[in-house]
Length: 129
Image 1: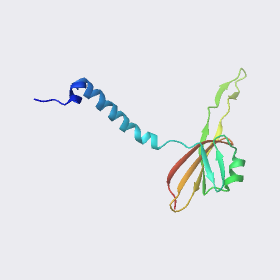
Image 2: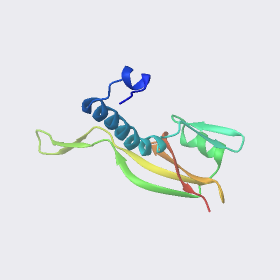
Image 3: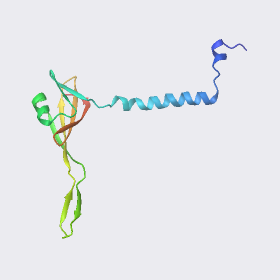
Image 4: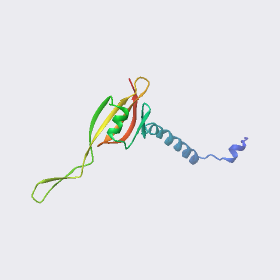
């Protein structure tokens, strides 16, 4: 039985095969997560808005979105009873809104998530209409 020089240099045993296959499997499982990454900026015409911009800046730069959706609040307001039995609210909660910008046929729908008046997340949705 003849072996090639490459086979003689790299002995492949079961443990090595298992490690290689495990690495390939984990890499392939991570691919969908890599494709759903958030964007740090969104282009409106010739201008750009970024995470951290205010609702005012986004409206001025991009105009009104195709749709606005109130998704709830972020942060936890904690209710405690005071010594007199009254309820006191500690902490602040801020409203969370999603604004949808549709780039039209062939483009994407971008979803901008605001917490309070600050842009917190930019996501690329499905194809536009």
